[in-house]
Image 1 (tube, rainbow over the protein chains, first blue to last red):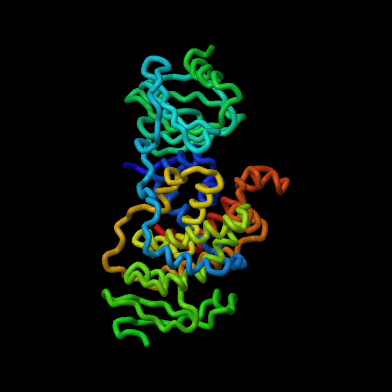
Image 2: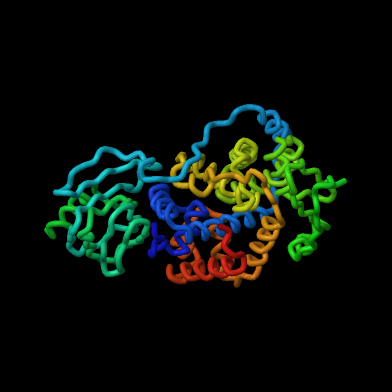
Length: 203
Length: 222
């Protein structure tokens, strides 16, 4: 697999590493990292920085007996921590909902559900009409490719959209396009479905 | 004394001079599978302690590592708004995770501090936001990479840690300010821009320049 050409801004990677990204957005970044050695290396550097930042802090003593408590816990089994890489099929998606021919959406609930995380499937050759965005939106292409004014976005590529940006993606003729998208929740639920209808029909 | 199978060197690094706490640092190069026995004076390196934990499940090493890092992790969590009692619980849990998941520690990829940072961050997100961060961070924290069968821990980890520190110190003040706000608070770069009354683009470019400089000085760790 070729490495991606479109990457998150360093500020986004820094937010990811510091823990400031909300989970839906962090997940889309993680999906990009899965196929991007370049950004994985950047993340490691930022994590090293995080380690140095922790070491630089003035220590705050723990209360008496804490260390003995910890020592006593060493032989107990801890809670299971899942150790796996992020892959799209690990995300708890809901059922696939049909939007239009060849076009569907699968929503996932992550975190407190304050943001939307979903898989959007677009058919080969799909043209959308120009559309803007509500708040910030992160996309990682999982399969296929689309082209818009910013270039061609293929598997692994990351795209950040914000309020003022309009684009008109055009899916490659070669095959369908599958995107993992995180976006801030619109004020009213139905406006999003309305937006998809708008993207296709222009209404 | 140092076991025969070990060769070692004492490095007087700039970092140590700056810190002034440790008069010298012993960097161990492990040859073969000999248990690591270090002269414990002065303060033992976190990486050496970690090796004793992974290779020998050495509880004394854990105790030393706990004493070294738990108070720092507690400080980090308090910075992020955790009440002291919770910060203490999470700091303890962070170090216990180090013990339980020791086999995932890969010194070629991260320093002990960096690894502890990622664990503390994830526990913080899980606890404070009541969310499971496993999904969004599993990749960077618990990547089940083939741990080296025969680890040859050269000075790389410690040196790299020193380089990160040097790089950090060499950052222009305004870049360091943004970095510090990122790591010591729960704020995303957009909120930091707001807080500092700076245009978003300015904060983004400071982070971009800082990361470029870090990567230039530290080199890629992958």
